[in-house]
Length: 108
Image (cartoon, rainbow, N blue to C red; front, side, top):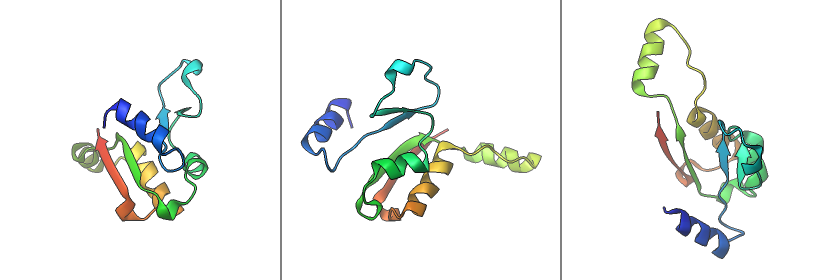
């Protein structure tokens, strides 16, 4: 969805449509606020933003481990650091967001 369409939905549906970006590598403190948060999406942030987890649709996009990374780590007997998607998707389940209401796109 294009940025303009997202902004339009936010203005048309302020009680039903929220977008919050989280940035882990941004060092300019002036960019952060209600819509842009520093660090990874956390369980606390999701609880703050989501009023009724059982009735929301969540769209989550971010990095995850590739099949090749998982295979290489397994072969070396190593454990991969948690990925964004590996952290966030379980939080949503713990908070009661139904699986069929979660849409995700990962890259890695």
